[in-house]
Image 1 (cartoon, rainbow, N blue to C red):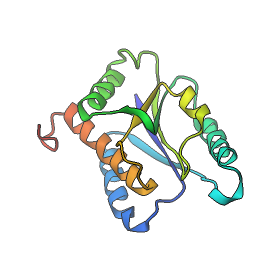
Image 2 (image 1 turned 30 degrees about the vertical axis):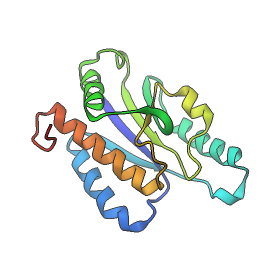
Image 3 (image 1 turned 30 degrees about the horizontal axis):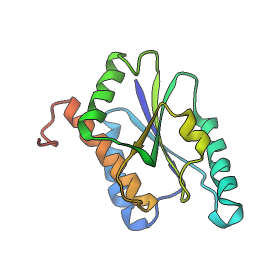
Image 4 (image 1 turned 60 degrees about the vertical axis):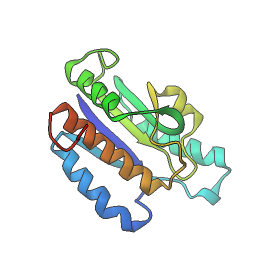
Length: 160
């Protein structure tokens, strides 16, 4: 199963770019693709219009048979071992990944994700109970996925 991570625009603050790039490099060894979609300027529309414009871009990047994971502060807090189990299920074609070709994990823009994305999602993950800047959320997600992959691969990166 392929895994694609969709991120809004360019990372901010730029000081986090090196950390993001490091985890993207590490994740490529597991076949993970990272793509950016164009985010909207917050002041150009109402908050709902802004989120829906981003949702429309996200939906255009999805394919039939995708397992969509939305990262949202109102989602279920995901733990490393749960994430690793989902990755294993994807590799083996087991529930809930049976019949899915790709897992797509999406992070919202500055205002978060539109409700339409949350509703379409197969899973909604909270990366933290804290609201965090988009750049921080990106790095947390990338590191979390990398750590989950190392659990699946029995790599010593994750010490329990």
